Length: 414
Image (tube, rainbow, N blue to C red; front, side):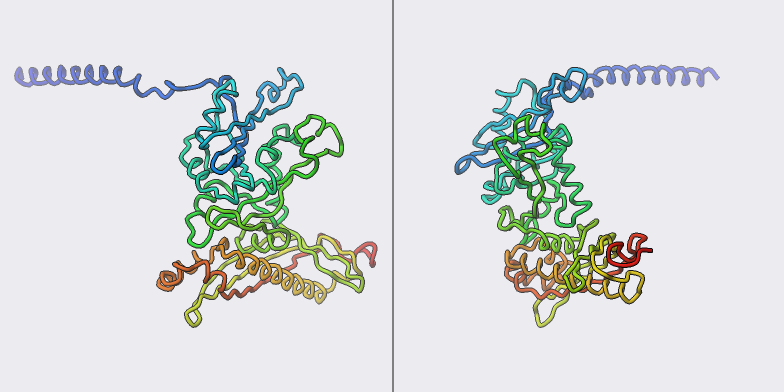
């Protein structure tokens, strides 16, 4: 019994000793685990809402930082001044330009909350590879930032304007981009991560949404621009830019942009205008659902791509004398809608094939379905993509006519 008691006593001493050592080690390590040693208070940060990047000369850059004026946004301390300030700085590299901007910005520049990156068209046509490399490496830049191209203008012109709806111009542009994607099939948002992934596609490249300023550029930055019911300048979303690797090579607009969105499965909602009656009047179709599948097969050693589109919609507008209560009439409209969609898609594919840039993902589908053939064709995929045969099949279903039958002004109402 005495021997057992001594053993228990030694064990208790050992446990206490170990606990003391662990406690001492913990006290030593706790300061090292602190994550706030390099923290910067919010009131010491210059929060950037959007970044504009332009080319300056042959190899230099000009960076525009749209910085939020916190006092004007908070409300209580607002003085009625502009809610944002645009700081511009030139440099041999993007990193240098942003660091040099600290000479003009009285707080530490923070890109962590930037929602947009706007690229000037001149830079986009020269190439955005170096820009993407910087943004991917920069620790504060989020991969979820949306990227746009300033169409026909510089990025600083797009960001240096006052907007009426939404006090922060970056939020105004972002809202227009999201709304356009949701309601109009001719545009869709592209994130920094999407662009980086697209750069790795052989024979292809990214597609970026265009943004432009309509109106007087000189009056766009002035506060008076939002004091009028009819602003002198307004920023809007327009078209999609097709890239070959990192270079912008062509703009795609209107129906061709819609066709590209359909093939890329980006349509959430949209409108199609059909013609009817002897006076070539209008019937408007609202797309409620759209789903696209791309398949590939080989014929005589050449790739053939099958695009299958299923869509449902509703009649939103009818200007001609038409009986929407008739199943035969609705079936005829479905067929007309189907043919119109096929025409739009074929036109878009031909336009994009002329660019020789596979922004439609045909190569990815061929690689998955026919890996051996892909190995043979991938070295010259730009040429094979441009020459590929494409067959489009559309299935269209009109679900209803918005609780109305015959048009009010053209026939008997229900």
